[in-house]
Image (cartoon, rainbow, N blue to C red; front, side, top):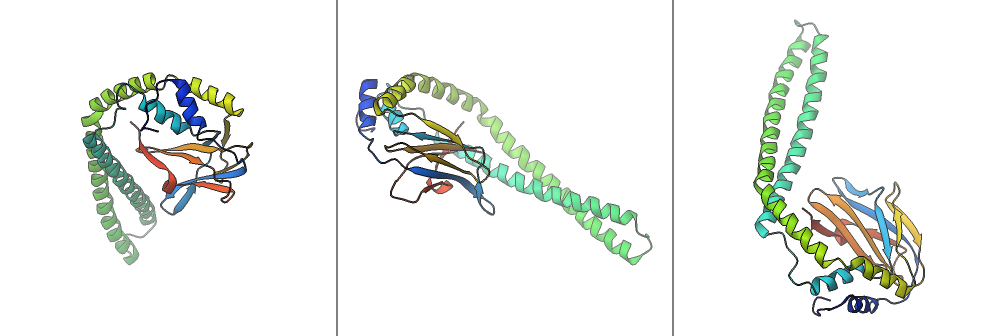
Length: 253
């Protein structure tokens, strides 16, 4: 779509409808994200069903824009990757510290019920001292990590604000016609956009009218969001799985 510049909403609509065909179906959509111990079902996640490729409309609007879409500078993106890495390290260190603190508290309560002259007390008191040193070390390390990533956030805060202003202004001007175009397309294909929300298993099932359909969903992440805009293949399995592997991992400031 980006190879051809479009001069009017009508041409955007025509180009989008050219992509539409036939072949509706009943489909189950499963939304999961990667977790430490495998796939994590995403409950209460909005899933939308479009009778056209909405991204092709945005691509066409991008192509006819008077200036290129503002992109996050490479050095800013690298800084945010560093911030996210430090945040993950901080979270892991904080969890380790909290577990050690809880064990220390339990051991302290156990010591209070022992005879200080007993061998058991002396052994556990020694263990308490070693654990206390470990917990104090973890506390210092997690605080240092917190200072590092919050410090980095402060260094880019002004640039982020400037970028947001430029991006939001560009998007407001470039995508001003989007909703009018969407309504024109829906009237042309005699269809509507369907909305649903995943249940506890991260799934939703929808019976769709005839025509090709695209599934759109998104899940927030620490760096932005996972975004899906996938066409339903009626010849494939009746379950469309949205995972990290087929998502667009977007940095969103």
